[in-house]
Length: 303
Image 1 (cartoon, helix red, strand yellow):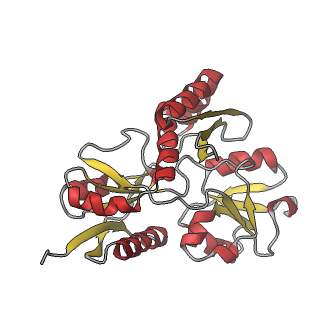
Image 2: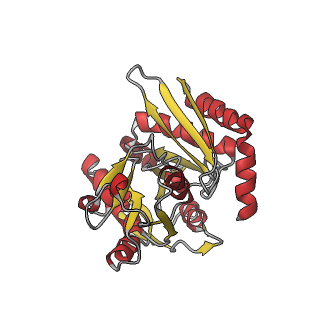
């Protein structure tokens, strides 16, 4: 009788990371009863100048054989390299809701917030869009995990929050949302609500098991978004946003945005295509040729 396959999933601390890992564990066990799965604690996301070093630590643990799979939030993966040598993204499970959500204690939608209401957010992207669309509101930088920001709201440190809808879903806090902001009004970050399951590229058995969670539609959309981010050389704090969707005829629709952090200027490119790599490249170079490179350079100089 063949020995049961055991897969170790590397997980770092934090409610969102743990919730996502639990989803992956449950999905793998459901797909393959002959597989046992366990979580392996990884070093917490140490931060230097606002940049998490967790990805490199987790990837090193993967390459060292301390775990077999690393669960990554696609939006947090560096633009370059697309995949670290020695590893492969075995699966992109079906992505969640890419919209941002408003959390207001009184249940009000964004357009009904009173003048001067303080909105807490950890995102330069959200601050830029809100400065343009709702200049009568006050945006307050609010760092920390989503649950920490929710506690800050409960303590009246801010009047409302804008957070990722998918984060609320993962934490079982969907009921806290008072409004969901359409992507046409607040463009999500590249890779929003998507998860990458990364394995060693020579671990064929694990790749075969984990690969069953891959969603072909999500993979094509993420491939386009990742290529756009690569062309822009846009790290996690770059003034870039965008999202790709699949049209009914199978073509891809990719919107890319570069912006000034103060919301003063936005450069947008929206194109359609069938090849994710070609589409991401085309939108990226269109943004750069539209003087978007000045927005990236100005943002880098301010960091």
